[in-house]
Image (cartoon, rainbow, N blue to C red; front, side, top):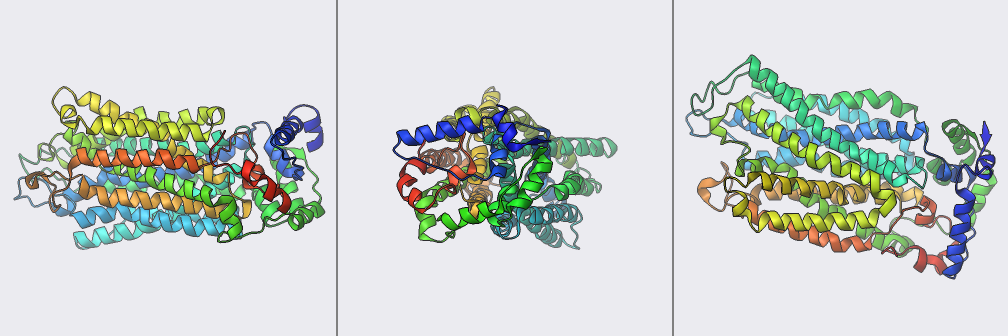
Length: 569
């Protein structure tokens, strides 16, 4: 076993040189800093990328894999639910979910997620990250299974129980946002911290992709085993009774990856930053990280008490001091996540309607129920494969090179451009022969959402707030995003309806159409571009530098203007 000091002096980490550079830079700005960083935190900041980093990414990332699978898989089966429970064989078109039911089924998990983000974010700062982490995972497993077992003697009863379990599924998923981000940020070194947090979030892309693949496999298997004619040929025969198993299997599959990671989540030690800075037990933090890093770290408990006594860092979330130091930062993280999720989730939820408009999905009456599930899943899998997954991993590759601020600004800019490019000549894109171009540009909006604000809005709140408020502030930021998702999930189901009453989905009033909906989403992305200027750049800095926890009261007064810039220079 090597000591932490030996590791640094041997040149195996940039700790000393990084500190000298920071002090020289501070001197140039007229501020000389003498940070009293704990050995255990410095060891984490300068540690080389090791196996435990990848283990943490997989353990935390599988939660996000499940999150994405569960939240987006519902959009794969909503048309099937409409056929199963609301079809009248005497009508010329198969049944669809009534507007209020569709809004509830699509949006109720987001309501649960918002609540879970606020509650578990706060609880993660009060009880510790590890203690809460297992609760969220078990809730996800139980409610994923229960969603597939939704019961009722009437269609209304089935939908009510499905919504009930999906609310609590969302509640568990909500807790995973602040906890996974905070745990990964507090485990990572400062050189590659952005890439590690982004890699956890990038597992969402694989969750989306897997949801599509599972739906393809299940629907294809049932379609082969129970062939059925199109609805227009035989309305009753087009919907085989076995189709009721398809949506249940698809939803229940989300429990499998979460179950596989439960044991490893429970084996993870509490993060050193929580143990040392919040629980104020530096010796335990050093012991835990000595095992993880395989480096001998001996911490002086008195040093923690001295730092806590000297520093003016015990302000609360609703204090004037927090408002002065981090008020604009929290405004920036909440507004950008809110605006991003309006666009991102509304796009995901009505993309099947866009595919219908451009000809990728034939009219519902020309397909059987299982064939429609298959074609919806195929279209969404192609978008995930070509636009969603690559965008996430571009962020992982470049976030610690070009920085969070630049990626977020670029992402919002190109989302705005492509939204308007889709919307303004919308009639051109929907004419025969131009469909492929539409889908390519639609895929690019997802690419730049994920190689852009969809990833960075998750990363930044885990880096810029104090340790004792980090999980809470990330939860508040994420909850703001889910409020945007609710606006997208509920509002755009109505807004995207055709202006022509004869072309609207059953039960919906006329809306403003897909074209005008895309114009509104483009304007929303433009607002996100400007609110990004409130978000600070954390590239290459330690968590304590970003949060100001390395400063005492006098230092905070003199360095606040230079260290807490909202726009990177």
